[in-house]
Length: 307
Ligand code: ASP
Figure 1 (cartoon, rainbow, N blue to C red):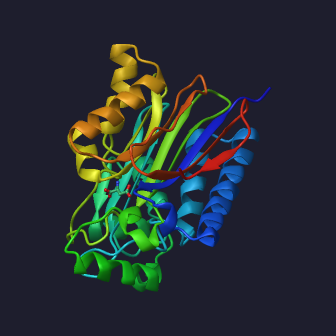
Figure 2: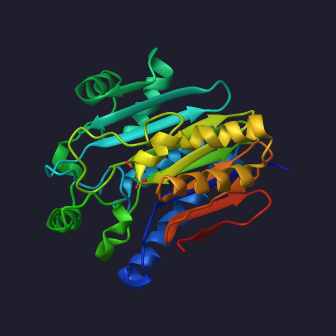
C-alpha cells in the first residue's frame, strides 16, 4: 500500500460564525478540499513531499479566498508585501523570500532560493531580481489587490489596529496558507506563504519566512507550518520548538504541537500549527476561534474544517 499524509491550512483567527456567510464558508471548504485532493493525488502517485507542499501552496496563493499571493492583505501604506518559505526534511534544505511585491507565486521563489542559491532568505528587490533571473512569473503589484482587502484595511486603520486576517470580523474568510506532507518514501516537507497581518508596518516581516519560527521540516522529527500572530511565533521559535520537543524531550508529535500552542498562549500568542511526521501521524492544534484546515492520509479519508 502507498503510504502518505498531507495537511493544509488557510489561516487561523477569531473567525466568528456570524462573520462568515454560508456561501463563503462553503467556498473556502470547497477550495481546501480541491487543493487537498490535488496534493493527495500527487503523493499517491509517488511525488516527493517537497513537490506536493509546493504545489498545494501555489494553488492556495492563486486562490483569492486566502491571504497569500492574489487576495493578500494590505500593509499600513496600502501596499502588499508577501512572505513565503519552504523546507525539505531530507536534508533540512530551506529557502524563503520576504517583502516581495511582484513575484506571482512567492513560494516558487522560496523554492528557487533553496535549490539555486547558497542562501536561505532573500528580501525585497533582491529577491525579486533573483526570481526574475530564474524566469519566475512577475506581475504588477496591483495584480494581488482585491477590493475587499482594501475595505478590510480601512476598517483596521479606523480601529488603529494591526489585525490577523481572520480577526477582521466581517471578512473572516481568508487566511495565510501552509502545507506539510510525508511522502511514500517517508520524507517530510513544509511550505508557507502569506501577506502577513492587516495594517502591518511597511517592512514588517512575520514568522512565515523565518525558518524555525513559522516553517520547519526534518525527517528525524516532523514537518511543521504555523499560522497566527507572527511575533510570538518568532519569539518562541515555534515550529523549530515542535521539532526540538520531539527530538530532545521525546514527546509525540501531538504532545509537542499542543505544548507549543500552550507556550504561545503564555506569550499571549494566538494561532495554530499543522504538523506531520514520518510515521504519517498528523497534528492540527490551534487556540483561536477557528483555523481553516484539511488533512488526508492513506489511513484517513480527507476532511476539511474551520471550527
Ligand atoms: N503568521 C502570519 C504573520 O504574522 C499571519 C497569519 O498566519 O495569518 O505574518
